Image (cartoon, rainbow, N blue to C red; front, side, top):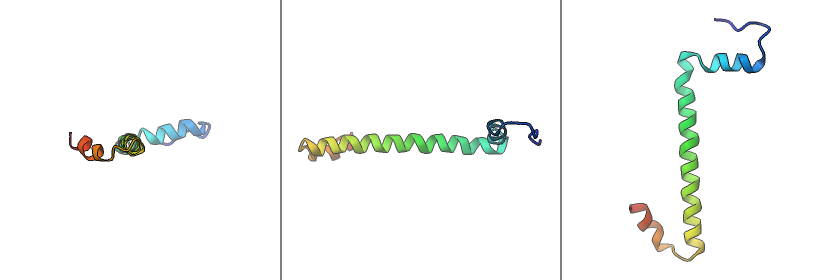
Length: 64
């Protein structure tokens, strides 16, 4: 299971990335990016509530 010497860097990277023991790591990376996106999206909404002077709605919105 060696990569050929004439393989490009991308081919070698993809070969290593899709080995069976690395697939869960790829899934974990997607989950980290997804939940980071969700966190930043929620933070932006809360900042908008604060900017509008509606701080009391943040907690109420989170509990729904």
